[in-house]
Length: 178
Image 1 (tube, rainbow, N blue to C red):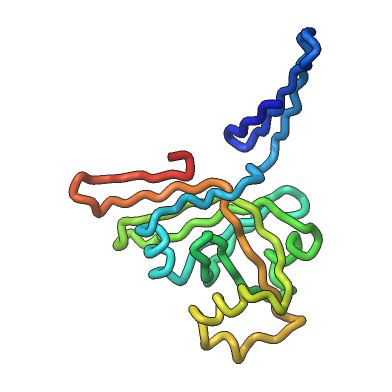
Image 2: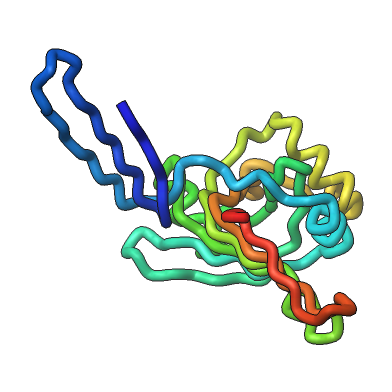
């Protein structure tokens, strides 16, 4: 059996071992199910230096909803967010196990760097150790945390692109496909 993933499409092919040629293909047109975890230390340091990004999530009707958010991240990278259950971005998180989402970090023209990501968002339990990662970056928010009104969710990238215009050679681009 052979398998490959390209641009969010998973192809699976198999052949018979009895001498006859028998093949089939399965096509999956969804988000890449494998996380894009190959970020270098420069990109991870950039993420740690930032506090705000724009997060967009697919709503239940298929439309996008974008919001400016505070985030923390692991070196995985997995992004961690807190929100209120009554905010629009909570609707798909409460209704589905996973939702397609995108994120941008670096919309300040003065920084000359930006990271664009696609991936999967999902809720996490109130006792998840990832909450401590979030509160380590935003200690002032720990006193305001009020379950069940508040909820936490993660975003795991399946694709990313980092652009840096500050290099001596000019614009450099790194992607999860590199």
